[in-house]
Image (cartoon, rainbow, N blue to C red; front, side, top):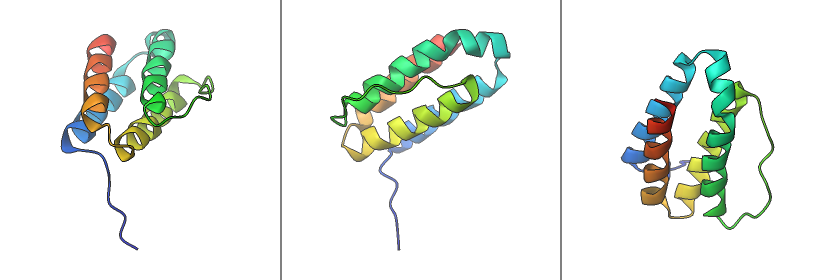
Length: 94
């Protein structure tokens, strides 16, 4: 079976940048930013039509939640919005 990644190149690049930066953060800094990352993931999931709240996760699992949200948003046809959301999040993270 051949699965095609629905994410655009811009989304894949930005997501990679966000994840790399997140991995470099001290734990206390990442912990303080978890709510903002969760908010970004929530905005992306909302694009898919999902109205259920996302669970609160640890700093390590938060990036997995964001990855899934970005994938799902792109699969729903919202790659441009997803790329913009990820860029804003990367800038927030620093």
